Image (cartoon, rainbow, N blue to C red):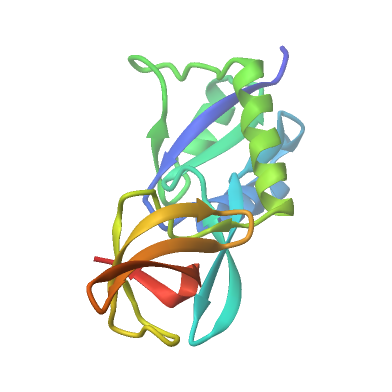
Length: 176
């Protein structure tokens, strides 16, 4: 029987624990040849706190784990009875495998996001923001341009009754 990818639903925040529990249970089981990979798709996100850039991991699909395996009664039972697992994704009682092209797209997206961190906060043109650091602290403005690759924004603020563009970094503003 060929291995296919399935999605396991877990309690949110327990993805890493479930993965470790499954790996531990598999190491003691004769079923370890039937399960190829256990994957938690993540991305790197960057944020600036107190003027320091920090990079952290964020899960693409909180509460879900991908697993490549041969599905039979034994593997199904082992996974269903692992602490933190709430079930498989599928219709009725039987889990449905993910199409291979979807799995490849998820893996590719995760690999790309590991190389180039994305900002934790996403800004859009037309949004109102408050400047929290820099020369214009406590000024409010409207975003005119967003440059996510550089982590910069162009914000229009009103100084002495005139609209003035100011270039700021993401960490210098907060959404209103």
